[in-house]
Amino acid sequence: MDWLFFGEISLAGLAMGGLYSLIALGFVIIYKATRVINFAIGEIMMFAAYLFLAFAGGMELSPWIALPLAVLGGSILGGVIEKVMIRPMLGESPIAVVMVTIGIASILVGVVELFWSADPQLLPRFLPREPVFIGPLYLAPKIAYGFLIGAAVLILYLLYFRFSRGGVALRATASDQAAAYSMGINVRRVFNLAWVFGSLAASLAGVLVAATGGLSPQFGIIGLSVLVVVIVGGLDSILGALIAGVFIGWLETVAGAYLGGEYRMPATFLVLAVILVIRPYGLFGTHEIERV
Amino acid sequence: MRIGDAKQTYESDEAIWTTATQKFWFALFLLALLVFPLLANSYLLYLGCLVGIAVISTTGLNILTGFTGLISLGQAGFMGVGGYTVAWLSLNTGLPFPITLLLAGLMAAAVGILVGLPSLRVKGLYLAIATLAASVFLHFIFAEWEPVTGGMGGLSLEPAHLFGFTFQSDFRMYFVIVPLAVLMVLAASNVFRTRIGRAFIAIRDRDISAEILGINLLHYKLMSFALSSFYAGVAGGLFAYFYRVVTPESFPLSMSIFYLAAVIVGGMGNLLGGILGAAFMTLIPEALKLLTSALTPFYPNAPVFMSPMLEIIFGALIVGFLIFEPHGLAEIWHRIRRFFRLWPFRT
Image (tube, rainbow over the protein chains, first blue to last red):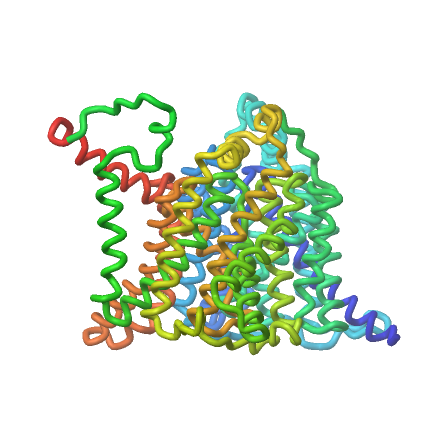
């Protein structure tokens, strides 16, 4: 076995996994605060990446201005989706809410195709191009810098949730909505905030992933990989999302490199199936006890 | 106008058709189905067959999702199992179509039971994701198990045949698909008059309470999975006979979502709703195609916008129905009926 090759593949996989962690974090924030499984997260990522394309490619802004603008656009989209389509579904069965997010995903795909056509696109290059070596291992610069930006934002998020007032409100709402409400937390605003922050993380990751692999209206498929990540990690566990994200990213890349591209999805879904049978609530998720 | 229901036995309350008027309209509907192919052109016949297949599959999914409350994203996968079973059997054995369709349904039911096994431990969204995993595996098997499934190229099959008579045209397939659809919907409506169907509904309403009432959860959940995938398998088999080719891409994930959408738009837990939803969702793209071709003389690039518009309309229908009309088309249908029944006292 070629250990150098294995090391390089693993490194690329781990870096990709870092981005998965960031998306999964966005997913978990939304789930924790509002109990909504967001099947549209891949499409929100895609939408932000197309916004970046419009700002940086179409309007020829500097990528470093286009990136925040695109991420801002993605977060506003998340907030609007929550206000217009998720809020009316409050109290409905989880199945219905999930179907709403699937519908939103379809709408977003259609809108993107309407404006940018169904053809695959390349994002303007904006990350440094000199190759990165970690010891003897080569790592594609796009992935390496994408990982660095993603990791930095991830740490900011964790600090925000730990120390800021908004973060505490979010965690309080997640653990008990009624108690949080009676303590003067504006729960409705927290719901909205969760969607904005969740979409922000997803949007940033969307631009970074699209910068490494290109962009097309089918980009939202990545949402399925993220779904695997959050189920394996536990839907309501931030720690789980981080660990499972890195692991699934690594597994997917290694399976793709050694067995072939068609094995990427089955490999991760096999892990998912095993986890569902052994620990249905994920590695770090809370085990919900149901009473009549 | 009808004044009231004077029912004296439980059986008459549980009957599928409670009044002579209903029987009359149903007979008229059957007659219309029979006359339709004689009058329709080939395009309408093609649509009729598509709707028939969609009705069977949607009814199957309705049993599982609408009546038992188990959400499934694997419907296309089960249809694929049925389609590939029919294709393989017709290529390798040459059995007549009633047997291949039955075997397709049974094969899909077996796979459905396997997929349903985690349903005792996981439920709700976790179950949806388990069925999603199953459909990923099934797609992988369709694409990679080349000796049986023909790999990415898929399988082409002979037209359906029975006693030397072949069903190679849409006209002939119509007389296979539509009677089967009517039969299977009637069978489904009978299921919900038995203990089995009642158990399904009890599980949907509250599974723990149902268990306390003495319903064996695993048993009935698996039965629901089996029944639902049987329908999907038969629909998939008809799909294979209709297009005479099956490939892994014939049964994509978006197809599972399409059927879920049909159940929701039609009305969850309502067989009539399933039928309306299946017809509505199948005909929407065709209506859009008509609109596009009507607009093309005025806006030459209208066809470019058709596929994205279809995606948007599809999503907007799901979101709109769930927010504004959660009981679906069936509820609209009932409202119209109520209007005529109560007219002129309530307008």
